[in-house]
Length: 541
Image (cartoon, rainbow, N blue to C red; front, top):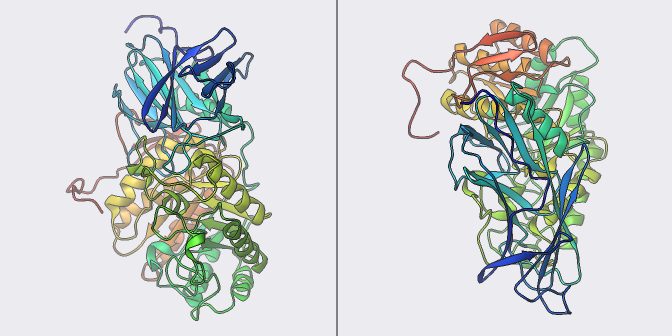
């Protein structure tokens, strides 16, 4: 390491190379002095011939960015922009995740094929720098890095097929960057990058905490189960104006787990009466909903062409039905809506299986004129509008497309009331590597602190404490068999923290651990012990 940090790579300029990709392969685009890149000798902007043109408009100033705009009257699947530069001094890189993370976020050394969705950070051991795209882009964007430079890969497909824009100009995305000061902590640089990408996050006007029944009930739930859980949580919460939420998870609908009709089943009855009862118990009512699962009356025309049975939100009747369901749910009195499974239902892959491909090739939405990102954004904006003043949690949603629209984002896969190993891996990893997104993109929900007889209390109570002291959303799921005075006292201490505004907790050993043990809370540090005596479990859970 030299005494002075190397100059950071500057992306606020024309890229060094631009390529487009159609169904047949790569088309190299050539630059012009005005920042327009055209390709194939077929540009519609050059003599009326058919082709591709990408505008790269470099906007200077304190909020500088590179604005990308695409014209193409031939099919386009992807774009690649390459900025070359010397990154040999970088010792580690950090990327984000397409949607939730799956215990897979980490600082790593050079891995040229590593796909880093939305943004990345570089660290040379003393200075960190950040590069990303502004939130709500009209394409799915990911970075790749190596010692010779950075590549931005942009997916503009419609489903799994190239898009034909015709006469439409596509505002693809804005590229942004932040450069860290010498010695500035990488966590602070990550926070500044998130603010640069999302100048106007939509945040709750109060700290969010409470309960969700899933981790002890697993869908085997009822009005009585929810009422007893809510009563216990209410009693353990501080006597403040900021009351806890009680979120009814899957298991309340008439169609069975994960399915409508979205009306209360025989174990719940009328859902408006349930909401009123929860308010009487001193909690705020919340509820889970899966927008794109079909109802019995939905025909093939309403469903995605790729198979799997999920609804296609570009069909007008589908979007109208989603809006109708949400308005009814909010009208019942639920002040928080957790919507789930849209990424899986739309694209047929979980985030950990997406890589650069995101979905299978060869299929399209009913409306073939929009990119996948535009289709997703239309759905998210519909959900936001239909939910009115209710808080919205996106689960299994694209994080960068959610920011600025939803107040809360489930940033990691499920923790577990049955396996401490899974809770350790999923919960702590996503909190550590996405805590900087809290208050900058949305309110982070790193998932639940389960308290069940299957989890060793000495570990479960540590996760409860970290979550409640982190400044992020803090939910607990307490098994009826675990509702002892000792647990009630620990929960009361935790919720006393969670109910008030707190600085975001910062992981301190995150460059060397996937599940950091050392954390900073403002001017105080604390060390946790996460590992069970026999170590990790290699078989998955």
